[in-house]
Image 1 (cartoon, rainbow, N blue to C red):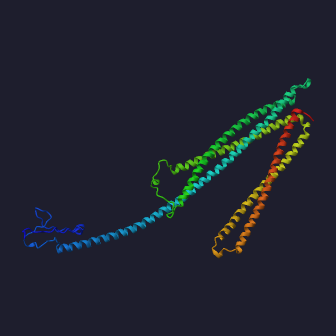
Image 2: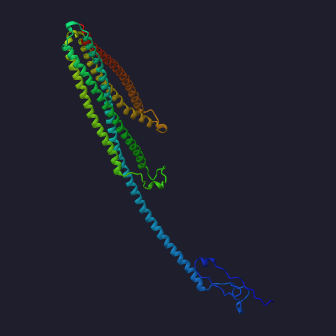
Image 3: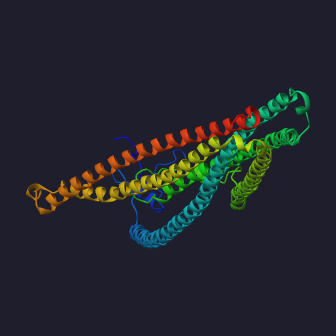
Length: 433
């Protein structure tokens, strides 16, 4: 037998190393580290590295302590997590409720401003329409000055051809000269007034456009905030937008937002005031010029009044008939409005009856029967449809009557203008009986 001694490698306990228990290190030879030193009677066959009993007890007690510590730490974390979840859940719900409340208040504020903008937009629109009507009246008034001016100048030219002692500067010629000067002044005034009206119309439209842009922005913002306010934790269309919480540089503050709308409303209010002032001015101009021309015309007409009986009588009859037609037009317009309101009032009962019928069609199985409520609802729908048909027919007849009245009014007004112009011809130019 060889005198060489065979020695086994030491056992490496990975569990003890992981738990921090020091491993028993066997004696190591200097020549070969890691091998136990074998000598004398300690070597009996192959030797394995073993722990002592004290190390064994220390190892498993360490494992128990570590498990207990981990258990306590897990319970602490569980309790803290539960408390934190409840606290953050309540805080999150409160914050979300506050945000929803603020969104609701914001919606009310936007709605209030939007209503105010809409009110001023409608006022500006009505003011612009009234100015357009005044502009048309001014243009018509300006056009209406041309025939008397032509007649007056023609009469003056005709009177220059008088012969003998009749070629005198009498009262008729003096009144005609005054009429020509007056008409020239009226035409210049009407042109200046028309230019003012056109300028004011442009300013009204610019102010109205600003209000409409502001209203459109508020309408879109209202819809977005309304949509945002309807979001809840159960909404399926919510997404993460991390960058949306960052304050943007171009975002205005609440004061500048309110001031912007208030400035637009102030500008609209100023234009409304200017429009009202201009309307009063135009009405006064039209009234004064009309009155002046009428007075001067009356002065000229005095020389020829005996020749105009028939034309005046026919003109008076037409004006009387026009007043009756205008009165009937007003009555018929109110009748149309009443019929439209009656038709509109039937829409709600019809919707209710149809909605009830629709809901009853959803009854399941044998419950879907033609019972007394079903028959009553069907009869109600037929009755309302019949009423609407009769009202629509009556409304159509009323509109046709109004159209005929309008045609009569236009024909009467045209005939009155024609008689007035003929009266000028007969009185100031023709001088016939």
